Length: 132
Image (cartoon, rainbow, N blue to C red; front, side, top):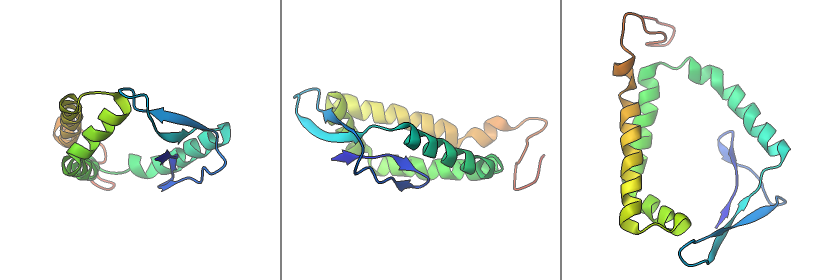
């Protein structure tokens, strides 16, 4: 398995990158490699984030929550696969790794409810260009 950087919605070409091995800590086996970022790659990631920020900042809490609901569904659909990755890359028992995924899912579930938490006397961007 070769792990590269995800920047601006796509996997970056890391064919010439320095790489570091990924070990299964339970067995010591090398299971893959991860690309090490150069300062140029970090600059690309920061620039992509800066370009994305204004649109995301203008996105209503309800639309943001919908993104999180989709993320929640992906976690649920891939619960055991995620636990297998944790087991392989962190050496946890599979049952413990399943618990880690469940705890992460609880955080996502909380984020899905953020629109209700934000309610108060004044909420910015409750919908596109509308404050309430």
